[in-house]
Image (tube, rainbow, N blue to C red; front, side, top):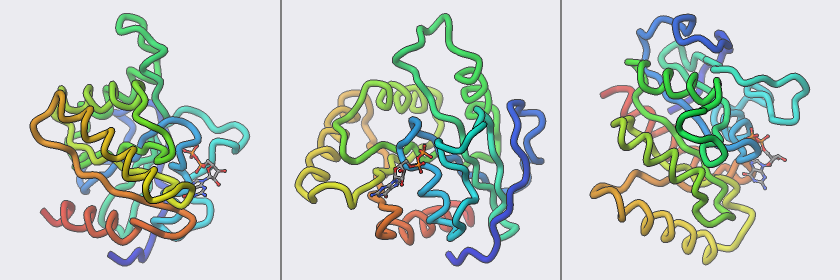
Length: 197
Ligand code: GDP
């Protein structure tokens, strides 16, 4: 897929204020510093479409971007499940859950994990929550230029092993680097295929 246009639409904390759900939608989520903004900017070939974590005043918002006037790319705030008990989930945790469960045009959520790290509970707990709620997701490994091929494969294998314990079907996994452009075409092709149904 060629990116012809990428425009910011709206930021908000309220699902009722999201744009009309009349286009295919793809969300990006991950812990702070995972490389989400860099990946969104690399995908869309825009230098600062998504604001990096270090941007002053960056708040916990659902950010909608319109791509090629065809689909929505959504930059979601990070999650922190391990630190929050089930009963006292923070406000933004609830906001993300509500969005993910209710947004009927959301076709896939890309869960970003730093490829340098072994599976972290916070990430796998979130993936399990997605699975339990039948929300389709893909695991996107970020910063793949930062370590050896062997280490990358070993971390991917660990994710597979953990996911296999709970799920019969493993999620698609895509390896990326915003530095080298690895995975960009694959990710865009994946989006294109699903968006066209
Ligand atoms: P966010 O908080 O998830 O939006 O993360 P950012 O996109 O702001 O990235 C966090 C840090 O990781 C920044 O210093 C980026 O330059 C760096 N980074 C992000 N993606 C990559 C990548 O693919 N390769 C390398 N080497 N560094 C990256």
